[in-house]
Every structure is written in C-alpha cells, then in structure tokens.
Image 1 (tube, each protein chain N blue to C red):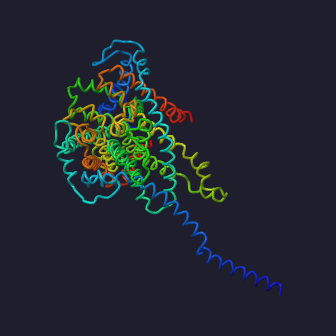
Image 2: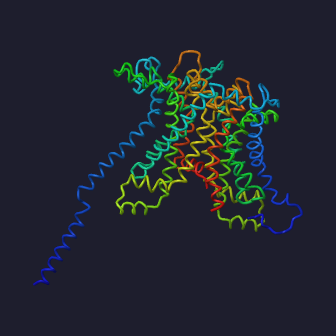
Length: 314
Length: 300
C-alpha cells in the first residue's frame, strides 16, 4: 500500500513536473516583463535615432522649400511646394567672392584632389607597412613608433614647417603640394593598418616566395597585393571620406581657385554679403555631404571596420 | 624574419636595400615632418618672427604675450569646457547606446547605421547644419516661441554665454556614433559566461555593468579616451563653420588662434607659441597613456 501510494505520488509528481515543463515556457508572466523591457529599450533607441536623424531631415526639407516658405514656417515642417531650384542654384550659381559658378567648381576641385591623394597615400603607406611587416631592418620599428606618436601631434604644430618645405620644392599652393600633405598625414594610420594586416598573413607564403627567388617588389605585387584586397578597400574608404572632409589643409595649402568643396561650402554659407538663402545653403551642405554619405551607405560594415581599424590598435 | 640571413655581406647598409628604399617616405615623414617639424616650431616659438620666420630669439616673450591675451584665455576656457563635457557625454551616451544595442535587439544594423552616419560627414557640414537648426529666428528657439512661450531663450549661436554648448551639441551629434561603435566592439569581446555567472549570483544588470563589465573594458575605454582627447585638441573646422569664433570671440578655440595668427595676422611667433602650447596639452594626455600602454607591456 505504502509502496503503491508513494509510487503514485511520485507518478503524480512526475506528471505535474512534466505539465509544468510543457506549460512553463508558455506562461504569460515572463513574456509580459520582457515586452515592457522591450518598450523601454526600443523607446530609448528610437528617441536617440530621432536625434541623429533630425539634422538630415532638416537639411533635406529646407533644401526643397522656397525662401518665402522658410520665412513663414518652421524648419521641421515638410515643404508645401517642392522646388529643386535651391539645388540647381547651389550647384551652378552660388557665389564665393567674385566667382558665381556654384559648388560645382569645388566639387571638381575636390575630385581632382581626392583621386590622386587616395592613390598615392595608399600606395606609399602599403609599401611602408609591407616593409615593416616582412622586411624589418635595424631601426624600422623606431621610425614606426615616431610615426604613430606623430599621429597625435596637432596639425597646427607641423603646418608651417610643411609650408616652408613645399615652398622650397616649389609646389606650395599647387595640387601636388596638397597631395603630398594628404599623403603625409594619412601615413600613420594607414601604415599601421597595412603593417598589422600583412603581419597577420601566413608567413609560409612569404618564405615560399623567397625560396622561389622573388624579391621585394615581386612579393608585394604578386602575393601581398592580391591577398589584401579587403584591407585596401578599408583604406580607400578611410581616405576617401577623410580627404573629402578635410578643411584645414584645403585652406592652408591651396589657392582660392582650387579650394576643395568643404572650403567653398563654408565660404558660400558664411559669406557676409547678400541675403541669406537658407535653402540654397542647405542644398549646398547636402551636396558636400553626399559623397561621404554615399560611401558610408554603400560600404556599410566595411566602413565600421575601417574606423575600428583606425581607432583600435593591434 | 627575412633579414636573418647569416651570410656576411660586406656592407650593413646595403642589406635589405629595397626595403630601405621603400621606407624612405616613412622615415622622411617620421623624422623630418613629425619630429623635425615639431622641433622647428618649438624653436621658432622663442623668436619674434612676424611675416617670415626669423631666428631672432626673444626668450619667453611670445608666451608671456600669449597668456596675457584675453582671446587665448577664452580659447583655453572654451576648449576645457568643450573637452570635459564632450568626454563625459560621449563616453556616457556612447556606452549606454552600446549597452542597449547589445541586448540582442532587432534592426541592430539599422540603428547602427543611423547612429554612425554623422561620423561620415565633415565638421563643416555638421557645423552648418546645427547653425541652421539653432538659428534663433527659424530654429528651435523660434519654434518654441511660436508655440506660445514668447520669452523662451535658447540661442547658442549669438549668445556669448552659451555659444560653446551649441558647438558641443553639434560635436556630440557627429562623434558619439564612433564611441558607440568602439564600446559595442568592447562589449562583444566580453565572455558570455560572465553574464551567466552574474545572473546566477542574482546581481542586477546595472551592477554587473558598473562593477564587472566596465572594469573589464578598461583598454577600450582608454583607447576611446585617447581618440576623443586627440580629436578635441584639434577642434577647429566645427567652430569655423558654426560660429566663426563669434559672437565677438566667445567661441574661439586654440587651433583657430594658431591658424589666425600664422596665416592672417602675420604674427608667426605668436602662432608658434600657441601651437607649442597645444603640443604640450597633447603631451599631457598622451604620455601617461603611452607609458601605461607600452611601458607596462615591456616590463610585464
């Protein structure tokens, strides 16, 4: 009897446990707390997202309004009558000083500055990184350390000596001069990037190529380069956005007719003469921001990887 | 690696020659530009150079003049306010956003894209957008007033007392996404078991973050601090775009002081002295970090 009853209770207990097991996860209580937590979570994230999106929205909306509408309404209201005139004006007619051919001039200047600067700086830095990773010589690490520490020196400290050097070379104020400057200041971060990447490649490849009689440049061109396309893309993203967004070097190292887009944009918007045309200003701002934004949205995760690589060492 | 070929070549200099040739640009940049340029600027900050650099040494004259200039004092104060607040806010906001993003949420990529896109934009674009949003007539102040609060005052473009906070708002908008990304990478690097152990011990989540996770993320925090710190000292474009240093000189910053004296006021010595002070500031930030980071590793 006793045996049976204990057996029974055990069986009942088992049953109950089984019931609880099967019913447990479907219970309502945990789900409810989870959803309250989720509301908080997504609420805060959503609010933060609004703060980050707001300026982009304001830029777009303002650039599509006419000036009368801007003077009457507020900056957040959507345009009643959409007009693309501000965009046309920003691109082709906005004035800086005596030139009234719009931002298009700055855009093409920036393209002319960016393309060779990106190519030269990446080539120089990748070769340096390669020689640091695979062909170390006495003192190479010391030079590299100076280079990395130099990345933290404010540009203002080195600008004037560079002006003198470029003037002596006869390239101050020219495109060549600015390309050199971008190559110099892109060097620490890019060299670090390439050095670490090349060092992470299997050493056997390098050794095998050496045994087969390949030299410095051959190994670079035939083995390292084809194997490192991702890091080249990362470096390109870094440099395209960095050089496009540069303002200081543009002001210091170019002349007014070759000013890059950022400098020209600042001159258009912050010029004191004439009536302020906020819609044209915002269209111009969007146009200048468009290139890095496109790079950012297209490259997505690679962009994140690029800045993370730029930020976190080792 | 490759240089360990034991064959006794006649000349050390020509060993590994191609690598040395390829490194010439790097060596040039490191020694001539970074090291040489800095030393040159420091040396010439003790001269009375005006339009052109002249080696006419005047001792600490330029520095005395610098620290007697009210514009420089304002610049330093602004940089201190901006620097301290932007460090605190970007670390706190960046970390909180990263912690929220780390809760296995949906649409993580969408949120990350939104938080980070301002970082792709230049400081010029950032400054001009916020100049417009904070515009007293049409921007936030104007809107709040049109809603009924006629006396509402929020004018960080033309009000000298709060102008630096307007720049701070813009700077944070541009930069916190990056901090968030770095922090998120740090959080992802933390072992899942730590969380499980904390949950088993019944430690509430916020305490786990403060007492366990944040101390574990020390390296990430230090790297982030150095990056933000180095960026703060360079603060220049944002101010030029948003306020041009105005109203008056209420939003001047050291980098702008240097540029104006070197290239506009044609007072090179003064510019060199100011830039040397910037270098000193950076050194104060960097040297302890470099010591902790590299000095410790060698011994450990």
